[in-house]
Picture 1 (cartoon, one colour):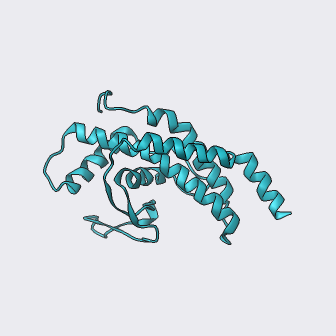
Picture 2 (picture 1 turned 180 degrees about the vertical axis):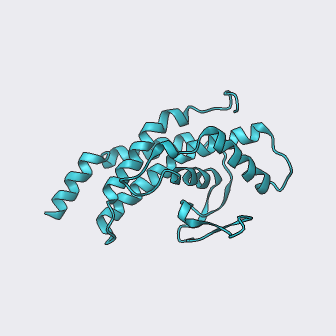
Picture 3 (picture 1 turned 120 degrees about the vertical axis):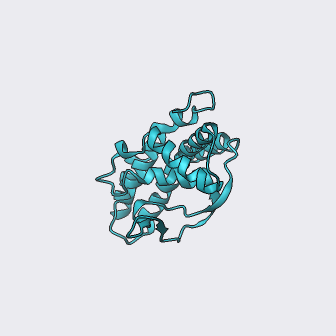
Length: 187
């Protein structure tokens, strides 16, 4: 009975497995040309894993269980995706950071990453494009992860609903984000 219920919920909320495979291949084709640097990434920078010091002069990252080398733009895009929340009943995509907030965040990031006093607007915009495109990978990755967890985890969490939300957001943003290019004007 549980297997039947799981299968029914999965099929009613989520793309068929073969379509998910096609989406993965589609992303691979579209993201391989981006040239985002591979860096050491946290890969799970939800807001609960970012702790401000008492005087707010610095931050500390915690919970490194998913840390590994990955594309720089994936880690940042994933972080931006986490702004909306992680509880299926309270996820709010209106909280995804605006272009202006992303620009401010990315400028600060690049200043630190490059250890410099200034960065070009073109570099900020290039990273903005990369980050938003790779945010799609984050949606697909965590969506599929949640579907696997739904079958194997003992945690009381609606993984199927969460997976469906992430995959549906991927589908909703796919064309807009993949169509971003360097020909647009920056903020």
